[in-house]
Structures are given as structure tokens and as C-alpha cells.
Image (cartoon, rainbow, N blue to C red):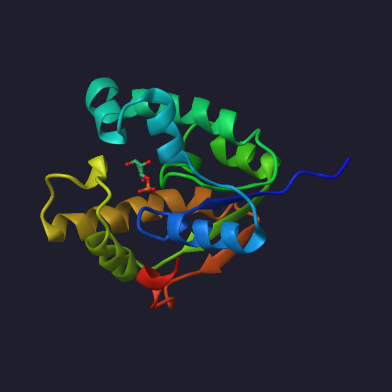
Length: 166
Ligand code: S3P
């Protein structure tokens, strides 16, 4: 039996996991899964609703359960949420399930991407632009030790045609 291929993208919000994941899946001819979209369709609620109703801890529990469901599928490209690798033993589990790739990105570029995007990110709501920058810098420091456990790192800070990748 062939070993299943699972490419699992991790990285901060706005690093391009969904954009890169879709492009990668298309060129490899594999189905693409975005963990947030999977959660939303399975739970029939948006990520924001889950945060509002269950708090962040409740969302993380749902996220962990859904990660275990989706990461069992064979031959897929999966993009995780920005916080997924940083809770429970999720990053070790991700590494057991497939080829993990950390999309590394500077704060400046993350802020640019997040401004361009339309996704609602509960953790960034109700913050001034200055507060968003400070929050990202601080959270990135806390999260990097998890992200850098990925098997591969791709520096995506210099990709300037992000919005054009399909
Ligand atoms: C989160 C990132 C989001 C989503 C949720 C929490 C985080 O996913 O899972 O809003 O903690 O970084 P994206 O990284 O796809 O925006």
C-alpha cells in the first residue's frame, strides 16, 4: 500500500496558508482542505460564532477535534488555522500525519495581507491598527516555537503577487 500524502500548512494569520494551499493542491492534483472552512461546514457555524458562543477555549477544543477528523483523510493539502499548532499536542500530531510546512512571514507583510483580506478574525477585532501590530508581534513570538517544529519552512515574506495566485 502506498503511503498517503498529506501536506499540512501552518503559520500565522495572513501568512497565505489558504492561498498557497489552494495553488499547491491544484498543481499536485490533490483535494484542498482549509481547517476553518471544514469546522464551519461541520459545525454549521462561523468561526466568529464559535468564539462568541464557546469562548476561545471552546473553539480550540472544536478545532482539535476537527483537526483529528480531517487529518485522517489521505492524499490532501490541508491549511490549518493560525493558532492550531499552538494548542494541545496539535503540532506533534500534525507532524505524525504528514509533511508540515511553516509559511514564515514578517509582521509587516502579515499586516499588509490581513488588510487586503476579507476573513473575519475574532482575535483581531476591536483593535486599532497600532494595537494589531503590537498584538501580532507579541503573539508571533509566543507561537514561533510551535511553528518551527514543522518539518519544512518556507519564507513567504518576499512573495509579492499573493493576491494573484489562484
Ligand atoms: C486564528 C486563526 C484563524 C482562525 C481563528 C483563530 C488564530 O485562522 O482559526 O480566527 O488563533 O490565529 P487563519 O489563520 O486561517 O486566519
